[in-house]
Length: 187
Image (cartoon, rainbow, N blue to C red; front, side, top):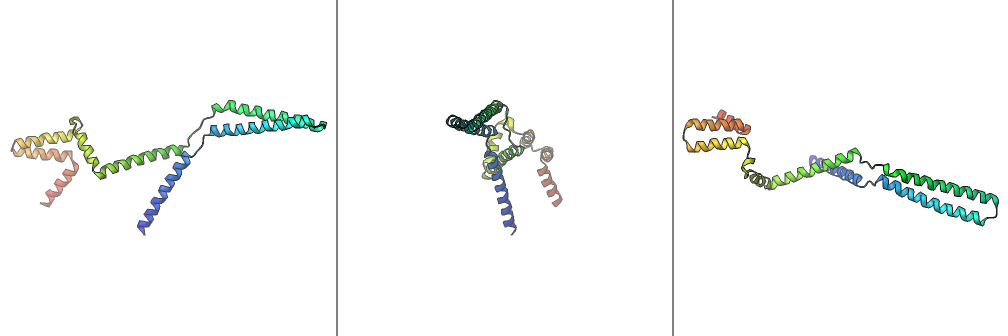
């Protein structure tokens, strides 16, 4: 039951991340949407102006002719307003929501962590660490100091050097110190 619940929880999180990614990448540009709508309004106003002109030219009724001329004036005003919108459009900025940027960063961090885990679990991490340590100036100072003392230890059989090497190793590696103390208390 617990395994099923954790699987469902993981499925929910994956679905949530997928939804957020599609929501952020599926957003259209506000500038493009405004421009497309302005173009549609302008085309409709021009078509309507043409119909009003045709009505004004073909009718014999003065009231209809006057109303058609008013309709033509209204359509030209609409076209002028659309031109004003297009003039102001370059000042409009597209902005990404704050959470979309965060989702992108979290996704990148997740991919990096997954890549590191993959490297480590396949054994490539150990190989990469050995390659990095093959460059002598990238070896940590503590490790170089411990190796120098151990090297001296190999050359001499002096018991003081052995105690000194153990002291250096215990001071530089907390895990080694804890293991040393466990073994000391065991004896």
